[in-house]
Length: 339
Image (cartoon, helix red, strand yellow):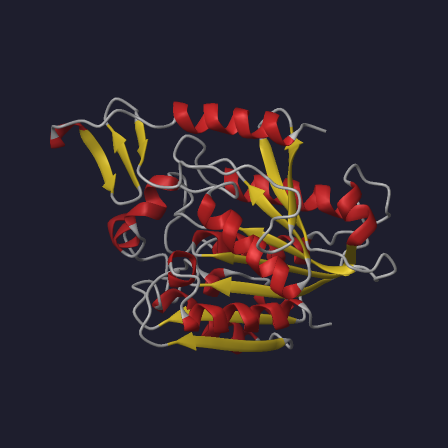
């Protein structure tokens, strides 16, 4: 196992190498997705947010939560930050397991950034769950579908602990593999959904998925189009960011982004789904379409739409003490503890 310090140093070097120079001429910019990322014509990548990282900690003084970093796939650097709540009684039973997947347009942020470290830690403290926050390789250097494959590799690694003899003691000793939930925000919510779809197609021995939490999810918001639609029309119906991060996508008919194109939606391998939306989120159409499509699919699980008025995209990350953010976290904590 790699130590916390080794992981942080490695990530610092990786993140630093990915930050390009700031150019003064607009002609040098190939794609400008400010305030997130700029891609220059010479191939340089400038990440404008999500570059700061914070180290893992043992027994955070604010929450009592401990965290540690582990490398999952040494060849690629795919890794995770694990979280364990304060355990007051050694005889306590196994705790629900949360798999969290961060957002950031598939191209910025990590589980090690202050934004995500703080939020997942606070959710773990409130819900009293064990959590694994996934660090996948990011586009455009590693174009989609790499993030999906990396996330699945971490989930397979997690599942290898269900017989209690895996490589990570926190999972062996404290995680209840019969109460596993997957949750994510924005692009991470998209990945989270697709991980449950993979689990539907390729069940993981010893693992029972009970919940899927989608926070301000990134999805296409229209029915798939027919074969008579031109390539240009297909491109117009798919966001530019998705096209740049996933150059080989088939467009708006891609089941990775369009829930209506997902053939296994009816068989989704979990008991309940919560879809969180924010009134002023410009991406609100996607999760609302997902909720409607899942309802129409004939899926027999429990479904909830959690609506927040007057707030924007991932507001809970930027203003976690907001009353609405606190209320949403409390509801998600309850969701994670459902059987």
